[in-house]
Image (cartoon, rainbow, N blue to C red; front, side, top):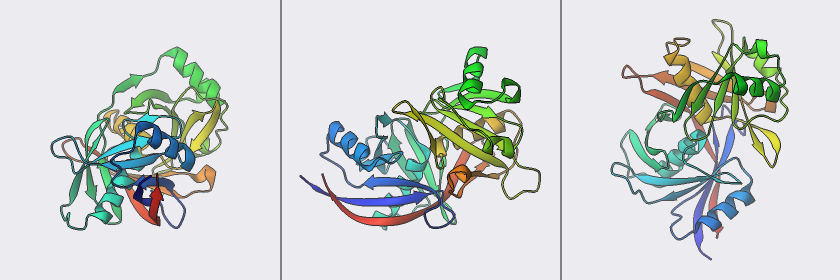
Length: 276
């Protein structure tokens, strides 16, 4: 048994305990795949991250990201939380950016005024879903197929399918059944509102549909779709977690070169050690 430094963070938070919690095990050299998966299952958070030395040129650290059931090549709120935790543990790193080595490749994370933001990785699957998948989405979300404005693949590690509805109220009214895999729903707020979109994200765990409090990977994928389709031009803020009595806020912007940045605030709530 070895003692490791440990952090538990709240990502995309707007206040205490308002975002998506994340467990981070620092300097996790020596842990086996089975030990990492077992600990992630024990925390029972949406993701647990293990920080390791980098293997890719340009990276400052490597992440392994586990849900309670399996490992992910990339996930959004673990990327932000990992960067925040690594920077807190390495005050000698004064650069504005850090490089994260993960299953999706090298991901750049930069400091922001109140947290961090990651450069959205390329989508591994994009484009409209076919009619069969569209019907499955409507059935799983328990909505009328005619209420779907558009539906696209926005997979970037998790196999997200994005469903655009008419407005934020329609998103908040969704009461899903069993969704077909990783499904996110987005709807716009009226012009001039504090937030541009309401977002919800669903996945199946142990054959039960669960809702994620705030989801960086889905927000990254849907932002790339919104920008590429011309539905969105400038920077915007999305709200997520409302249906779960959370108050997550996701900030999105796109550089002139087309890079989409997804960011938010991160707060550390637990710091200590764990014996594994």
